[in-house]
Image 1 (cartoon, each protein chain N blue to C red):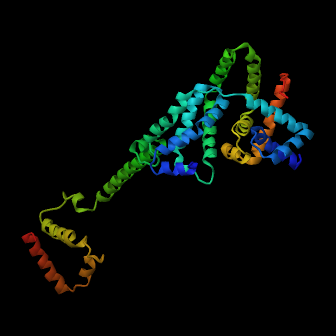
Image 2 (image 1 turned 180 degrees about the vertical axis):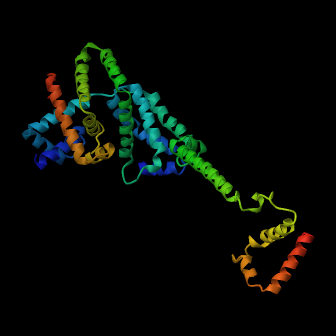
Image 3 (image 1 turned 90 degrees about the vertical axis):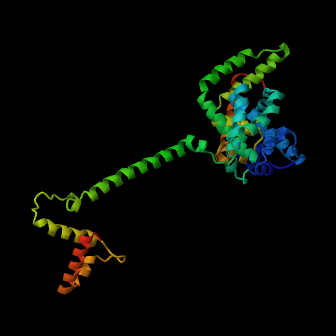
Length: 181
Length: 187
C-alpha cells in the first residue's frame, strides 16, 4: 500500500485520484473525532468535508517531517474548534433534543443512559482537556502526535489528559456511575 | 509520581486496544494490581471507549472522496487565478494601495510641473506692454540669443555661456552678425 506522503506528492504532481485514496483512508477517523467534539451527525459530516477541503487547499504547506495523519488531525481540531466557538448556543440546544430522543428497546435503555452519562461527563471538561482525552483515548494518537495536533507541548498534553481523566472520574462518581468490573 | 507509573499511564491506551506485546501486557497488569490510580484511569477510559459514534451510512463514505476530488479540482493547488487574486482580502488591499499610490504620485508630478513651468522670468510669461517700438528689434535679438543658445547645453553639460566668455571682441562681433543673418533668414 502506498504511503501517505507518496499520495500527497502524486496529488501535487497533478494526479487528482490520489486525494480520493487519502480521503478514504482517514474519513472515518476524522468523522468520529469531529462527532465526539460536536455531537451532531449532520454537522460532523459537513465539518469532515470541510476538514478535507482545507487540507487539500493547504496541501503545499504540509511538511513531510510530520505525519500526514497528525497534520490532518491538526486541521480537524482547528475546524471543529472554530465551529464550536461560532455555534455554541445552538449546539447546546441540539444536545438536549438528542438526549430526549434517544429511546430504544427496553433492554438497551439502561445501557444507553450509561453511555449518555459518560458522554455528558466528557462535555463538562474544559475544551483543551476534552480535546486531549478524545485524541488520546478514541483516536489513539500518541502523546507527541496529540501535541502536534493541538499545537502545544507534550507536557501540556499530559497535564490536560490526566486532569481530564481525573475530572471525568469525579464527575461520574458524583452521578453514582457504576464502573464495569 | 514514579517513572513506572508515568510509563503505565502512557501504555493504558495501547493495553486497552488489545494489540500490545506480552511484555507490555504483563508490565501493565502487574502495575495495575498495585496502583489504584491507574486502575481508576483504566476504568474511566474503558467506559469512554464504549461510547459509540453513529454511522452516517455508506452513501456518505462512498461519495465523500469523489466530492473532495471534484471540489478541490475546481481550485488546484498552486494554480494562479485572477479571481483568487482580486477576491482575497490581502491581494485586493495591495492592489487598491498600489492604485492609490499611482494616483497620488501623478497628482504630485502635475503640481511640480505646474510650479516649474510657471516661471515668471520665462519669455512666455513676460509682460511686453512697457516696450516701445525702438526697443523691439533689440529685444528680439536678445530673445533669439537666449532661446537658441543660452539655455542649451552640449552633451558634456557645458553651457554656451562659457564659450561666449572665451571669445574676444572681434569674434563676438562676427558671431553677432551671423546670428542676425540667421534670425533674418529664419535659420
